[in-house]
Amino acid sequence: MAKFSLVDKLRIQTLREQGYGAKAIRSAYPAKNWSLSTIKKICGRVDSRGSAVDRKKGSGRPRTARTAHNMAAVESLICSQEDKSGEHSSTRQIAEQLGISQRSVCVIAKVDLNLSCFRRISGQVLTDQTKLKRLVRCKKLLRRCTVQKVKRMFFTDEKMFYLDPPVTDGTSCRFWSVGKKKNVTSRRLIRQRSKFSRSVMVSAGICFMGKGRLHFVPEKVKVNGSYYSEQLLPRLIDDCRQLMHDDFLFQQDGAPAHTSKQAQDWLEHHCPEFVNKDEWPPNSPDLNPLDYSVWGVMLDKYDKHSPKPKTTAELKIVLQQIWDSLPQEFIQRTVLAFRKRVQACVRSDGGHFEHLLS
Image (cartoon, rainbow, N blue to C red; front, top):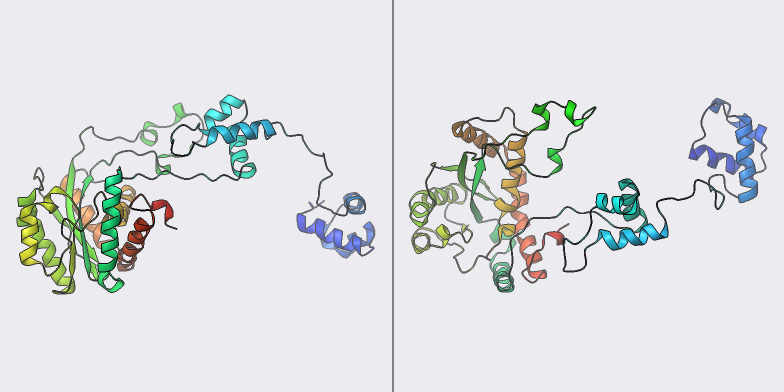
């Protein structure tokens, strides 16, 4: 006999309310091959309760985990107090403490307490003084950088890429397998990383019109004011002119090499317009498109790349391929998100604002 779905039960309820008997209902849907005895039970439920799907009050298996006591305990243990983060207990710890399953704890939190689970976001340490500077400078940036101006901004940054990136606790580090952990091959279970992984530093810039070149900093070279002014800035400005001629606004963050007198003087003499060291908000990678988007996408693509490079020369080739593959539409969306982020920073009084972005 066929099983009765929710829709089937509702159909039977409708026919029963119209005065149909069990045999007549069965005859109306011969292809369903319904059991006559089950139809009679459903009809009896409709007659006594007025519904074919609602359970009788007090029926079913009694709750053993989702009790009022456990709900109150979960509510007090699962959330940290305001401004006192890190004092909450994990679902596993709560389950052990209450003697119920971890799944029951999750159901209580989500269904009964209407709580949501969020992944924590890494962010810079912001003092009150730093927040004030971010607020003041973001307001000035909003006045200066209209939507059309943002489309002429050239955002730059440097980034270190490792042959063996640090292992994180993200979901990408998890996998499923049959049997016990001891039966899993070490190749699948262990993610190897050298203690001192070799790396490559790159410097690049993007704008609404496109990407600049990916500039590789030689190994063991320190990017100080001298190297930045003599080697990187001329190449970055050349990228600007290739994309926007002489109509651009050059951006850089507050790294020591960028704020050095040598770098500021060089830009003053060779750049039509730039964001000087007193205009860019401090501790603000969340405002630089390369930091808040591009580098992360490149790291994700590198993590999925196979086979992995074994030398820094091979790493440079892979990074160049990833850089070249970044679509123009993605670059444009990333750049246009800049003003929204600056506005969010102002709304948060210079504090963290990632949680305000939809």
